Amino acid sequence: MKQDVRPRAERKREVENDGIERVTFSFYKYVKIADPKALQEELYERWGALGCFGRIYVAKEGINAQMNCPKKHWDQFDAYMKSKSEFAGIPYKIAVEEGNAVSFYKLTIKVKDKIVADGLDDDSFDVTNTGAYLTAKEMNEYIDDPDAVVIDMRNIYEAEVGHFEGAICPDVDTFREELAKTPETLKVHKNKKVALYCTGGIRCEKASAWLKHNGFENVKHLKGGIIDYKHQVEREGLENKFKGKNFVFDERLGERIGEEIISYCHLCSKNKSDTHHHCKNKACHVLFLGCEDCMEKKKGYCSYKCMTFDRLPKKVQKMLTHNNFKHKPEQFKKHRMKSKFKIGA
Image (tube, rainbow, N blue to C red; front, side):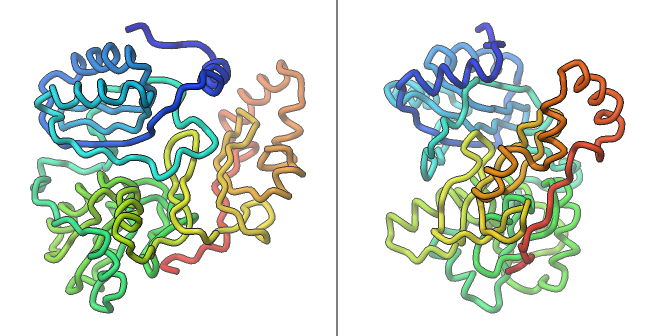
């Protein structure tokens, strides 16, 4: 199938106005895939024909997908998945809410060395020796148990807008960095029960095996992650112990789990906000939290500097971006700003 190479804005307008109702979901599976390149081509043909969009990683170790499918083609999609021995029985994590934005506008399938960038040498430990799963009910019990510790296996900008009560939220920007730090971070809790959680469960699969390899004997992780936790809570009438919003890696940038807003605007640090934005200055494009007042004042930019830069003639922008931004990114690209988020709060 020929890939859609049209400008992003054009694709976005088309999908927003096509009137097609879509199901947003994610799934992963660690399973041996003999020829990832051949599977990539097959998925482009089959899923492209169904009008699916998303970001999918395929590797010899398995598949990791975040995507959407037209609701009218869901049964066809599901039938295809069940027809593949590699994917039979794979659980889908259906989005908690679709939000105002369509989650994906393009189908992107990449062949990777790993389905999650973790920086680990898989030959150095038993990656199949993972921790047992926790249900939502059991997760709530861990949160209330003083002899248990709960750790967020996501990046700090994800935990900043939403996390479980009392969870340890390491100040890291990548999963690779968190895996390197977690054994040391948790060493004082080595004799406690450990519960891990992440967005949909995939990061915890590897993290639980890594911690067990590092001597943590009682490690479990939340099955289906935060997404499935929310569904279980609603189905079973449980107390929701997740505070705030669940960050998602698509156009929605988040879905509401708890009603409270626990983070603050990065621009003024005064008003509460858990709405992420990308700076309109394409040379910056930094991800930040912005309240309504600051977004109105700065017109969608993260700073007046970026606003001014974006008003310069394109020729001048190109020269400045090449000479200043590319080699001295601190002049235009802001580092992620810290809000009034307290680790472990």
